Length: 373
Length: 63
Image 1: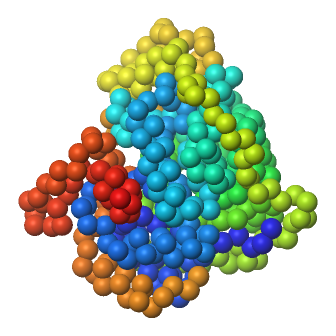
Image 2: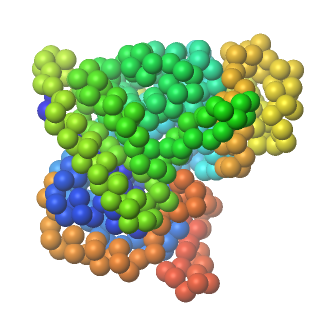
């Protein structure tokens, strides 16, 4: 492994790009991650933005990061096919070094209005995930990966996500994006050691690391407790930086470390300055902690399988359950009524394990779904 | 990574002039996937908006 590139998540956003411009001018940004499906409500996409992406793409330092595919949506949808067709077209132009998406499924009837939430980790979701990953791989012919999810309903789910991701990604020789802020969220929300949590992931599959900030919200059950959310709207907390040295030292296939922050947290000059300081700190940690690994351990994450099933893998039963859960989260007026419905409804005593769900995380999911509906 | 001075200059000018924000009020732009490219005039006199059509968008659909 060579030293990972220090990059930024850059979309066509005035605040993000203004914050990053001094870093770009100094030649410090080594890679860009672009959310190719987070489109822009503007007619005129400036040539300089395409030129910026092209400059990094030419050096094989542009990676694509999807947001809206909803990889575990149980019933294949026309919108997913359009997403895939769009990705293929964009990739034909830019030739991403790799392409990634998020673990989980999106709430919401409308494909693009939702938030990623977790799901039962069983053979059905594994089959659906493998089918979708193979379709992405077939569309781009470059390494394909998934990012660990910040959200979880239960400690059991937190503990199992890493092994499940490993099973899933093996099918396409895919990689994992280890988002350290997501790890921090889970560690905080379920009171576990973040390093133990990192160890539960397939570290030899980590090709990209994310660091970002987020926010705290008051827990539903206890006003003295706070739930950490991955809102990307603040600077990187020191607790997240503290996880980077261990990660760099133990993940021998890391190619990229990306700083993510949304434009709504980069409006003021001080916020922009802090963004640049965060980038510098990330870059310093990379240079001090990256190790040269044994060449035999290197994984190029190329997928040797090329054939995909003609018909996408579907599970009507799971689709009904996902729709049911989305509807409950979006429409139930209170947490009490939500819990009552979950305990007596179709998800009771199933692989969803709703009986184990943490009430504060359920309330958080309710808030996320209400926000995005 | 070094970028050309002309690109950096274009960016600086473009960012000074633009109002483009992809994430001011929501965490991600959530595009309307209706297959139309009808352009709507911006009542505030800005660049105007459109229902995104990936086929026509140089940054998205590269059409």
